[in-house]
Amino acid sequence: MPKRKEVQTMKRSTIALMATLLSLSPLTALAGTPGSDAQAAAGSDAQVAAAPQVGVTTVGMGKDSRGPGGRNITAFDRPGQRGVGGYFAQEFTANSDGKMFFDQRQMVLQVSSYLHENLFFNTEIEYEHGGKVEMGSTEQGGEISLEQAWGEYTVNDALNLRAGILLIPVGRLNVLHDADFREATTRPLMTRSIIPTTWYEPGVGARGTIMPSDTMEINYEAYVTQGLTDKIEAEEGLHEAKPFAGGDNNASKAVSGRVAFSPWLGTEIGLSGYGSAYDASGSSWLGMGALDFAWRMGAFELVGEGSLVSTKGGTFKETKGDKEVDVNIPTNFGGYYLEGHYSFFPEFLRESFLGKGLGFADPRFTAFARWGQADTDFASKGATLQSETVLGMNYRPVPNTALKVEWQHKFLPSNKATDAFISSLAMGF
Amino acid sequence: MRTRLPALLTILLLGTMPAFAADTYEQVYLSEPEAVRTIFGGDLKVDKQTVTPTAAQRTMMERYLGRRLPDKDVTFLVGRRGHAVECYGLILDEIGKHDPITFIVGVQPDLRVKDVAVMVFRERRGDGVKRRRFLAQFPGKRQGDPMMLSQDIMPISGSTMSSVAVSAGVKRALALTAVLMLGRTL
Image (tube, rainbow over all chains, first blue to last red; front, side, top):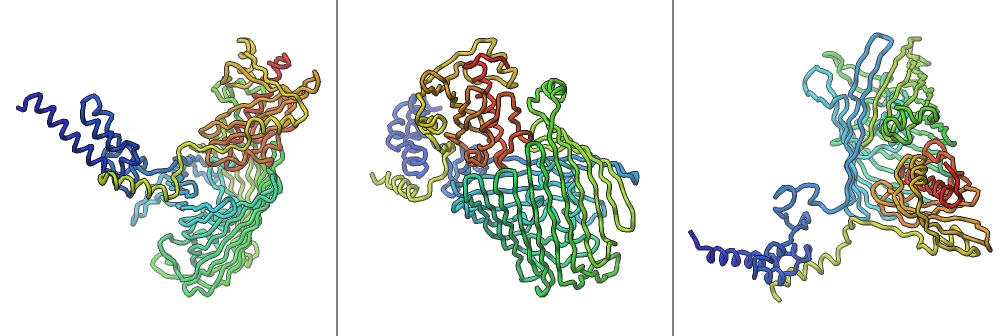
């Protein structure tokens, strides 16, 4: 057993050695603890605790084992300012055909980080329908997808360079698709088959905002991306043609862009387009044009978008049962919708359980109505035309939480019609 | 000296790299004298007047606004032409998404907003609220107007929390002026 004096001597020698080593380390400079101070600190026990303040860790310059994850690199070891958020949507649907079900529609995690004044990273990871994916099983599962993952370098407001998995900037709703931002639970018909929301592709490009005056704005986005595949059919439109993030069916790349003009706050008109070769040889091109707008006056808002798609036609192979069949690619298709919102909150409810009774200072109701159509093959002369009317209302105790109820009447091809009652809870966090 | 060389070289190397963003971030658009000029113009005599609300006044305002008032005392800027008050001003802080936004609100004696200007913004995003595009909605608003998003105020997209903060601040300024300067009840 060493004596107490020996222990003290060993302890001081060890601390002196550590302090010397630390004075050699670049981390010392970052921590703002001069080596000489650390050496001096080795002289007495009272100063020992204050000496090696090596709390700053910079990835790429070594890893401090005293960080929050020990030697494991955690988000706290990375410099920058970051935020974690996302949204959640649970739906309940009762159809006129007797089907009634809950759907854990979305659970989305968003992680965003400023790595530097001009360097920004953003990602959106979605667990859809519970996110249960069983490869090779016949059980209908959910989906886990990376809908956004991009890095951006800001040159100035007018030029931001972006690369990664990008939302295709066609129309309004594909980019502004978050459940807590939307008033209705259901998305317009055209956002399934014409602008296949949520539509994302890997690629590169730029976006920016130009401010010609203090009230006016012009926004743009322009990208080169993977491009759609040839899985374009009259039944589903472009829904199945969205590409795989890790490969392409041809060597051509797609171009897309949107320019939006907003003369003042509350009014915006957007014009967008998309062009992509879709077949394996890269010789058949698809072109898409879209027009969208948003107009707000006080508590009233009207939004809408419309899109037309033109292809060169052709066929693609699809396996149905144990047979491989040729499926025709429609040449012209399109859709549109108009949606109105009116926000209000009756004063007589302000003190009730819908308002201050549960501690909500500024709750609101929004009534909404939508009319829309989508036709996935104009050549079918109405056989593929679908229409919908949606009427509903939501209650928001706080801006990013909505309890929604709506009735949807769909006119399907062959003179069929369905009705559905849909409710949901959407929360942004 | 030799043992310190790596540390010194590291400092020099870091000095040549683009600086990583600090956790605190502040954009100053207007100093206090500039903000006062923006609201009062150059031809009014502007004095400061600090008022401490009584318990009853505080309760009334907090009930009306639906939240606690952050300050014990309230300092008004009072713009006079001769003896007549032409405008009151308040420099306020309201929390945006995480950090306070500092702005000035001018209120006319008839309890209408004269103008609003953002002085300091401390977050990386959401500074669109400093532009006339957003602030042009406030001049002419009266005490009693809801000043709520999607009712009579349109938010800047991507700056919802900042839009809420400025709107709430303007509503607070009108209530403070009504009660503490003009002796009104809410």
